[in-house]
Length: 75
Image (cartoon, rainbow, N blue to C red; front, side, top):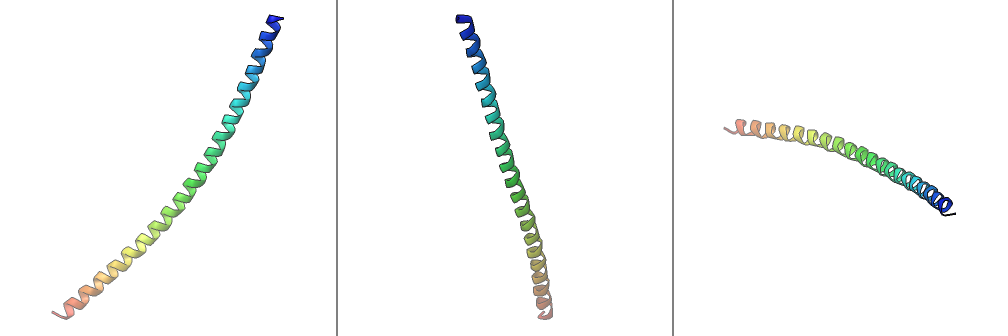
């Protein structure tokens, strides 16, 4: 009976280990999905910030040009 019990214990341990692996894989998959979503969100935010940055730079260039024109007319 000792051999049979030992074999049964090994089979149960292997099943638990398999279940643990499956649970770990599921957690990793969830983490990957969450990280992919966060990356998409960050990329979209970066694109918006770059667009705003270009608009601000264009407006500053225009304002600087206008100020120079006014200063040149007053010289």
